[in-house]
Length: 326
Image (tube, rainbow, N blue to C red; front, side, top):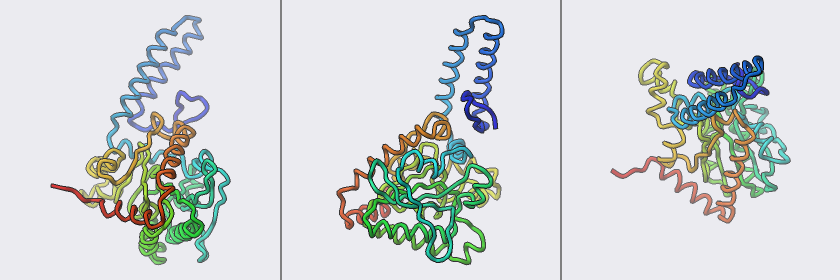
């Protein structure tokens, strides 16, 4: 971990961000010299700060997909609990799949957003190794998808709009997960989500990989954060298949069209939500405020639709994916 200009927190610097950190160090060094020598370097400091900010803005506005992927995977990126804290009120978590297991990789329950009751469901990642072990690094097992399905059905019964927050590298690929019906659990979720008669809004907040993400995202509106990604396979997985070399992940990321602008262009997502400069982890509270506005707008968009209209909207949306004219 290395220190940023914010003295109250330490944030891991990614490789492509190192020039910013070097410039920040020079500014801090000049400030120290100014204090130690009692000489006025305010003009020089102001110039360097302006140059740093301009460089930082240009850098983040021109990131390539693989660099955005690194931000999406940042260990300090806000997780499900952070968004619950900043956006929702009166969250009551509902546990278990009613078959004997409570998969901590998926969390969900009843909450309010700006006073409106909703069913909130999301994948869970930790901030520490201990937390990640508890939630299996955000990779759900079949029991997690069955828990989500139970909450979907509960929401539909009581006419609660559903919000899902997705940040997963994919469903857990272990032998035990396959033995207990991983593929079937995801497939059932896809089928049942398509039938829900309440609004379903999904946000890809970090990683959105494969069926593990789609199992929570058959929605009326799919949104994605600016530096998040959404893909049928991870760039590393794609590279290992096509080139037999995971080191080609950068090439794969560029080819897969996995980030917001490309996904919006092809109608895979419906909205790209702006992040604070540098990524959501630099200002989680501001990120949550922006996300809350988008969620409230989406709830307003679908609040007057009937159950049949919502199902038809969802059906038409997903049937149109991949359609193109020559």
